[in-house]
Amino acid sequence: MSTNPLLKVSDLSKFYGSRIGCSAVSFDLWPGEVLAVVGESGSGKTTLLNCLSTRLMPSTGCVQYHMRDGEYRDLYRMSEAERRFLMRTDWGFVHQNPADGLRMTVSAGANVGERLMAVGDRHYGRIRQTATEWLERVEISQDRIDDQPRAFSGGMRQRLQIARNLVTSPRLVFMDEPTGGLDVSVQARLLDLVRGLVNDLGLSAIVVTHDLAVARLLSHRMMVMKDGHVIEQGLTDRVLDDPREPYTQLLVSSILQV
Amino acid sequence: MPTPLIVSEVAKSFTMHLRGGLKLPVVANVSFSVASGECVVLGGPSGIGKSSILKMLYGNYAVDSGQILITHADKTIDIASADPRVVLDVRRSALGYVSQFLRTVPRVSALDVVAEPLVARGIAAEDARERAADLLARLNLPRDLWQLPPATFSGGEQQRVNIARGFITDHAILLLDEPTASLDAANRKVVVSMIEAKKTAGVALLGIFHDEEVREAVADRILDVTAFSPRKAAA
Image (cartoon, rainbow over all chains, first blue to last red; front, side, top):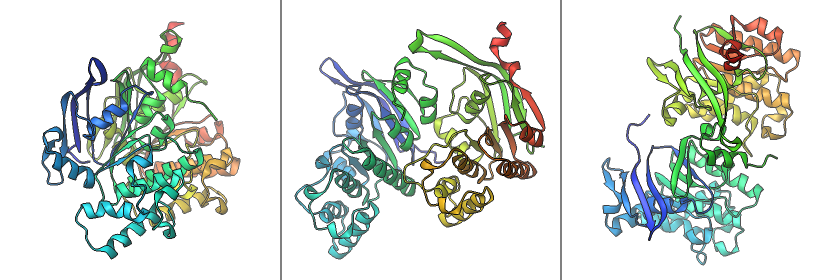
């Protein structure tokens, strides 16, 4: 087991005026670990995700990231340029709506290739080759490489967004309701794909979802949020099989059985 | 013989917040140990807390107090208080569990479900699949099912996939929750011989078996869970 957390979050809070976005969140994320953040809409899980990924500045608190050179850096003390570089290379962000994470009017191949160019790849043939391989990995057929995502179905767009994010071999991927607007059958395919990729690549991920089945399938550890506070956290199996807090018990008992 | 599993003064209750904070005691003062090469069977009527004990040992249930000590690679870890990632590491390397029901994952074939614990330990996928195929063949799972996801399998078929998945590793401790409940006589015999093989290999086994014949065949000792029931103490 590795001895250094990838991310060290301490006492992170975000206030919108007097309203609480998220309050006093602390945790460590370890390499290869998938953390699910669950809770109903308005519980602060997306605010937390946006703060962690530096898309939003927190009101207080600090997040330290274990850089590839072995140093810890405080994310909020980095320059804007450094943060953008991290976002484009070492991190991925999978949005609920693929249109937010893709360029809808450039080809699928270019969507994937763009991230490679951000890490300095300039060889067109090699970029196209890698893009083709990644489309295959996310089960998009080769002959669609020159099509724009506008012409793709919702499930295909989401898979393309995942390919675009993973092509640079990031160490940390943020996902905001990755299966949100998808049909159940499409969801199953996507979940299986994400699960396989996370295992194969050994990535760490923070997945925001309101779907406890998604959390069970993907995550090792779970954090339950309510009104901006983390009210319960632990091993995913433990939180779902033996929920301790009243709100977690309500969530778990509200799952529909099929 | 070493003793890889020691349970000491464990107590567990459920607080049902949706039922006005009703407190349901499950077990109290659970203390026992299992040595390598030994098969201990949890006995007692339904609802007395046998499955709950296994779930606590595997980390699926939290405990109110007490210790669950697992010794692996010269380190002793208390499952009752360990970090999630430590629990997951112990599961990967030392602690196996065959649950009553298989949790199926969409689109993953039976063969890969069985091979997964080995792949998680860094064994090449091809080798892991070969070992998985051996086990499924031994458990008489029809070969044409191997490439299918087990979601549509019968109860007995799912259970055999689950057993194969639990037995594929060389974990030092194996927890068995009624692994033979929906099997026919021929397959029960196969499972009994697989348990015998684990004992010979020095694995510490703790199980629940309602089938008397199987219990007679595998148990070195029966631990009566009634003794840990707080309800009995109250009566």
